[in-house]
Structures are given as structure tokens and as C-alpha cells.
Image 1 (cartoon, helix red, strand yellow):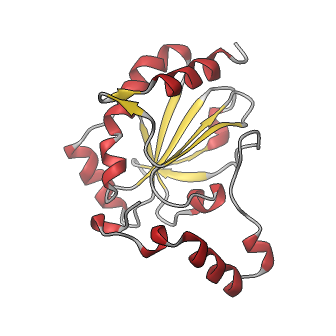
Image 2 (cartoon, rainbow, N blue to C red):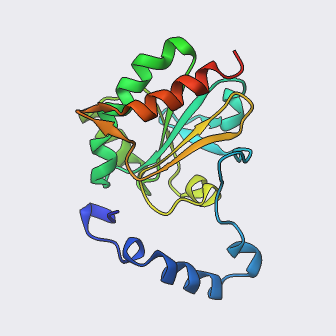
Length: 183
């Protein structure tokens, strides 16, 4: 994983050491949040929209979701944008909603990026990284499949599985199962 502007992040290189240091500095309760796991209820969140409004995860109740946490300075995040676009196009008819949650501190950079690189899915803003913290991500990108009942159905650390510029067969199978469940 990379840090801002593509530099190698020491956090990504030594996550255990950084996590240990953070746990020493923080209260024990803060260190107990190791993120969400498959089968857990997805934590609700409130984030900004590009238009200045707000959205909550609970706004999408009853819909299958692909929630991708990314940043404009993250090369693997940028590389997987075409895959996310294809997934939105391919699975929208089945009710899938693809949400991109940008963790950039400067939200104007997200708007500028999207003007140059339009996407076909909804992008929400998380400049304080609250969603990433609540979900326990270790870096960007990370993606969560959330079922119609609001539970984590799958978690992908790093770029989504892809082959030849499109989603890999195992990812498509997981999405087919996500959409089929509860219909």
C-alpha cells in the first residue's frame, strides 16, 4: 500500500508496530476496534456528498452494496476505478449500489479528480477518515460487500480481484450471490 502521492508508507510497511504504538498511546477501548469481519453488522455512518448534503449507510437499507474506501492519491485506487465502473453498470439491474467513499482530507481534490476522471457510481466524502477507522481499514483501497440485511458479506483488502481490466470471476460470483440473497 502506498501513502500520499505514491510514496511508500511506513504505516503500510509495519502495520503491527504502528498499531502497537497506537494502542500504547490510546485507551484500551480504542484498541479493541479491529474493524469489521464477515458476518458483522456494517456500522452506520454519516458522510458528506459532493453536493454538500449528507448520506448515511442506513439510507441504502435493503439494497446490496459494494462500499469502496479510496483516495485520489492512491495509485491502486485509481487503477481499480474502471472495475468499479463496470460493476456499477453490470449489476445495477440487480439492485447493486456501488459507493465510493473518498478519504482525502482536501475534499476539493476529490471534485477536481472526478471532473478529470468521471465515475458511474456515487462518491461520498470522509475527510476525517471516520468510516475507515470504524471499519478498521489498514490502508486504501479496501472494499466491503454489504448484504440486504446490513451485514458484511465480504471484505477485500487492497485492490479488487481483477483480470484483463475487468472484475475477476470470484468477485463476480460473490456479487451474484449477494444480489440473489434476499430477493
